[in-house]
Image (cartoon, rainbow, N blue to C red; front, top):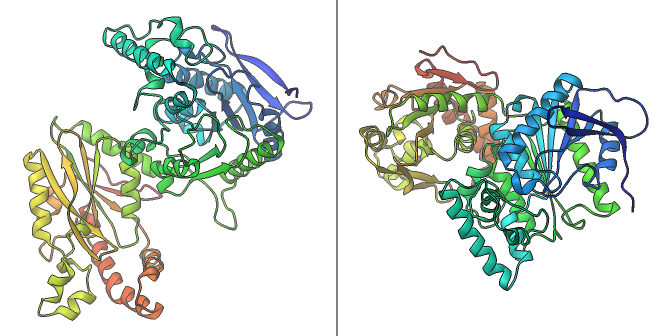
Length: 531
């Protein structure tokens, strides 16, 4: 079946002669400031993404234009290119679109290894401010794909060339080509550098972002920085995914690892058919419809069902502030940060987002781990009242928290913290471990970190930087009521009564501490002046 598409081919890099293509449905010049930029994978070039004509036609209906650049890695050039090389090319392409085509909002659509380009661009690209979302079509591990395609003597050859590549890189010869036989493991091109071979075949190398054997922490390190809305589209019958891999589970693990996943703006779609390249009319129709719906939700700011997708903005700004602060702290000392706010203000959410944005040298500690054990509360003279008020300032082991924070500041190499197990309703000891060699930023999130009464007097002074989450009191109480509906053994009336009598009182106590903050943060990013 012939693949053809109307459109315009143009040079976006006059010096090197790199071309771009705008796909169109019908005659005429398209107008509009929103564009989906398609980034192909290994060996891909113009129109090698067979769904491009149908995608352009559908996107045109929702006011989005469709482009595809030729990059250094396109066609047979990927063996000499790197993700950084592609980022430079994407920078040039987006700059051209902005200045010559009036494009101000972009969604990067990566296909296959182009998914790595899209993810990497969000980390190091210069024009990320105009990237409002990413689509990852076939985010597949090249390393695992090789395991599907190689057997027998090829496996032995793969190991030998991996050793050769590693040795060449150690000798400063990473940009030199491996013997031609190394390329035959991949197919075209005829040459591949030691660096690119290593990147595509070694665990946790630059290209290794989507492998099923990555741990949760490793996946967060690879994907955590993705702060724009993301649509991950995988095929259950992808021929490059090992049969032992649950495609749906892996896709959701990737989404959960992203900062966007914490914000619930990373979504997954698993096509039952279509394979790696989304082949066939039915699969393409499903894919095209999903992408069009995704970008439409980026465009409309007020949807009746509240499904508008937006980038993380103030969260990224806060992460950048903390990264800058940490850089000014003497080597070997962590930046100790308090994230304080009322119940329901989003402390856990922002902490998990920051954890991903600040990977790999960030640790999150929950103040809730220092809840007094239920059995200890029950042994107090005011047992009934103490249990009912659990979560108030005097129902925490403040002295234990104080000592742990002092140990971190004193320079100890390792400090263990408890965490609260909601299933058990009690803390679990030694659940989180601070490692001075790894963690440059320690985020402690909780209600009373800025409180100076009820035994908390010394706590605020132990932090290097204090953040208060601005939020509306009534909205916070509403969230707590909704959240507590899942607690077994209580009627809705009992839950509402306790929220009003306990959580509201705690929230009012926390509100009084906001003046201790160095920075106020929230959707409006109302920042306090910094020193």
